[in-house]
Each structure stands twice: as structure tokens, then as C-alpha cells.
Image (cartoon, rainbow, N blue to C red; front, side):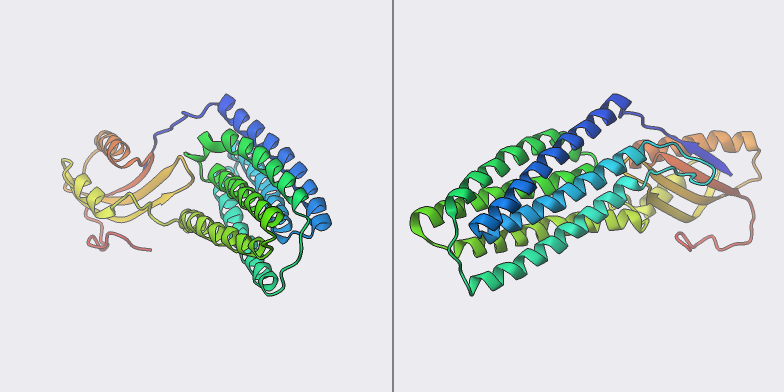
Length: 307
């Protein structure tokens, strides 16, 4: 059984520590916003402000989950956990995306009820607290933006904060309309719009993280292409029983059985394995290859993918 790794240690410890620090700053900022918005929402009677506070509270939880996952993700593998906690950040992304959708549905239900029963709202307080939300969330969004581009977990935290900032902008517009024009139904309409946007953003991330957790083949990889290109290598007769899955953001694994045209030596197999490994890494981004060599073995050679 040939077994090779292509490790990609591009992310240094310093980068991970910075990621953790940025998450911690965002957690404390969001706790401060949540507390002030709950108090403000209760005093002013603004549903949009209370819904923003609830969303902020879900942010605090999601950021804590992301932080814990980032910390656990750095832990080493052990005899009982041979992959370590490499899946922790994908789990965090999945949980965060799911909560984003649940919170959105709850907000929309509240907004529909409020539409039929608009209430007068203390708009001055709403305006000031929404400005606080925009500033604090805007700062957090900038802190996490870079990491969100390459990491699903950080993207889930970033999305929570970005939607929060947009919600605060919506609340600010609502506060201004209520203060100067006394249009109180705008509070419920804005809450609905925030909810729709949350579902739109959360669903995409939920889908992506589910695919990784279900060991689906990454969408950029076409198994048939890989099989055909490996078959062009000298002395390779057939490639079958292929499994390709994404372990986490950085690792794509492949295992396969390869039937050879002749009874080759182990040293020759090692040379061919290295060629296969280089090929799939550079062409398909697969950095962990596990090959079972075969010669004249009685099993179905035409089955490419099999349980």
C-alpha cells in the first residue's frame, strides 16, 4: 500500500495566533453591542433593534464556536484521533450557517406579526445604537476579511458580522424614517429584508460545509479525468475503486486501486507512485494519496467508484 503526503504548511503559527486574536476582539465587541441593543430595544420598543440584538447574540455564539474550532484545529493527532481536530472548523462553519438560517426564520415571523400591528418607537435611541453597531461590526468585518477568503470557518464568522453590519445600516435607515416621517411599519419591513438576506447567505455556506462533512468529491475535481490521466503513466493498466474527499480547507485525500500490466518490484512501484502523486497534486490539488497496487487480482476492474 503506497501512501504519500504533500503538506502545505503555508499558514504559520503566527498567522493562526493572529486569527485567534482577531476573533477574540470581535467576540468582546459583539458582547458589548448585544447588551446595549437589548437594553435599547426594550426601552425604545423597536423590533428591528431587538432582532439586531438577537442576531448579534447569535454572532457572539458563532464567533465563540469559530474561536474554539480554530484553537482545536491546531491540536495534534493522537492514536485515538488519527486526524486530530482537522474537521473542527468545518463543523463550526456548518453550525454557524445553520444558526444563521434559524435566526432569520425567527426574525421574519416576528416581523410579519409586527406588520399587522405597528407600534410607536423611540427612534432617537434606535439611531444611536445602530450607529454603534455599524462602527463595531465594521471594525470586526475588516479584522476577519482576509482570513474569510481562504477558510470556511472564518467565512462563517465573517458572514455573521457582515450581515450584522448591514442589519445595523437597515435599522439606522428605519430609525431616521421613523424619527422624521413617523413611518413605523418600516421597522418590520427592514426586519424581513434582514431575514431574507441571512437565509440567502447562510444557505450557501450550509451547503458547502455539508458537502465536506459528507465526504463528497470537491466540485473542482472530475474523477474520470484523473483516472484517464493516471492510465497514461507507463505500466498502469487500470484505476478503480477511487475515493476522493476533502478533509478540511487545506487537505484533499484520494485513495484508489491500481492494476499494473506486469508484476513489478516494490521499488518500481514507489517510483510510479511518486509520479502519480506529483501529477495529482499539481493538476488537481490532491495532497494526500493512498494507492493499493494490484496485479492479476480477481476483482471488478471496470468499477471506478465503489463503496
